[in-house]
Amino acid sequence: MTASAGDRAEPPTRTQVIETLRRVDASCLQAGPARALILGQSIRLALYLRSPDETEAVTRALDMCVRLLAASPEFARFHITDFRLL
Image (tube, rainbow, N blue to C red; front, side, top):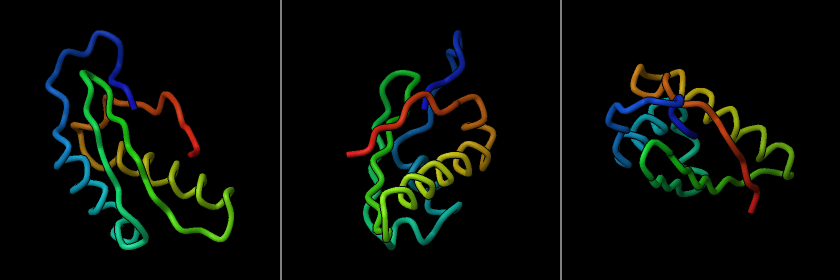
């Protein structure tokens, strides 16, 4: 996730990202760990999800990210810029 072009506001901390993610989807952290890395105006998430198949895992991960961005004004200025399946 990346902030809008020209945005110079302080990004959320790693702890804020994980706590907000836990608030919007408590089951996500029960299924597996989540990690956040803040690089400048970019937030990188690593979500370890257990799902019956890859399609469901991808759908769930993207849904969690969309809900994270809608959860709080501090995330509203970010948008999903890429996605990688490992």
